[in-house]
Length: 404
Length: 114
Ligand code: FES
Ligand SMILES: [Fe+2]
Image (tube, rainbow over all chains, first blue to last red; front, side, top):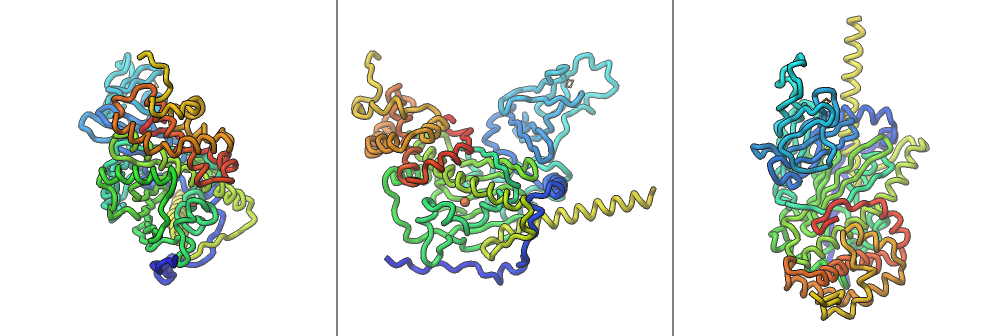
């Protein structure tokens, strides 16, 4: 059977503004560069840390560790229903307040000397407080800027230059249209990887590797006129980027257990009203380390948490609307999680090899082709921020030098 | 109930596969795929895959609230089949290596119970 010709790749002329030069390898493994990224990128960006469905009630909380900034966060749904983020640090002498990963409480008490905080972070009581030389009001938990878009919780460690919604621009509306905005539960799997966060993240923003690394999953989605299953469009907004996934028009129908999963899953997605959504083929990458894919059957997000220059952690979530309503729905959801996990398994293995090679220092430059433009864009955005921060540091040092 | 059947009556033929594959928890089911041999997987798949639509129809008709222990075992066995089918239908010869790499991907949360 001849495939209908339906595919036109995005042309280089549309992407020339990103540049075409080889890209230096050092930022992908150098510990000194990573130290700069902590401040220039992660302390200065909104970061995705969770979803509102993890905080179903007043007093629900989650603890999140963000190694890149050495922080432990306590994210709480308060009495007013608002989601707030605090440092998980007792204001008496700094003890980590909460140990559990998640739960529900009306107050948080520090195990060390029993200082007790409310859901709003305020200090409610402290034994023998009269002997201190400070007011309770001065002892509230340190709070971070925290905002929600599309059900996704973001925090900002510094002073945000703009609201989360402004920062996301047109992608805020897209997120609101995706199933994630209505999700009530999720399937999650987590991996640790010996690779820089950008190398890990980049793997998931190019399709060039699909047919080689995912032969069984990608085979059916390529065709003679689009042998690499490249996307049909790219889009950029500030530091963020997106692509529209191409799907083969004459894909062979699934067989066996896979066919049963597709049939049962499609019925559930239809019942949830997410089949044929406008965002179904949108892949949205939010700076610095989050992306979400709109596919209704396999609607997943992926956050790549940096741990060190050569270590990161990937958290993948498939978001679902409603609990498993029927055994068929349970089957389809578990199957699609396992499918995604299989694919990501293949990615993880090859990314580690990439890091090893670059970290050897054998190469001064790496190369991105036209259809790896999203990777180039991430590099451009990171290096812009790191260079600006470096200039700031130099400026500060000179000022101090002049003063001395 | 006094019946000692492992599975609902109309699925009695699948009882030899209960001990090996009717596992509780998504991670345990994924793990079972990972530590099975190709022969075990193929035998399980050959016996059970054809019964999947009928099993899901039967369980759907009952609904979660009415599932007894035998029904729950049938459910868990079918969920495990989903994992095993990926090895048999998709990975084929790549499965042994894939299983090693897959061990790094830890299932931490599912609606069914991780
Ligand atoms: S450090 Fe928390 S009460 Fe003392
Ligand atoms: Fe991949």
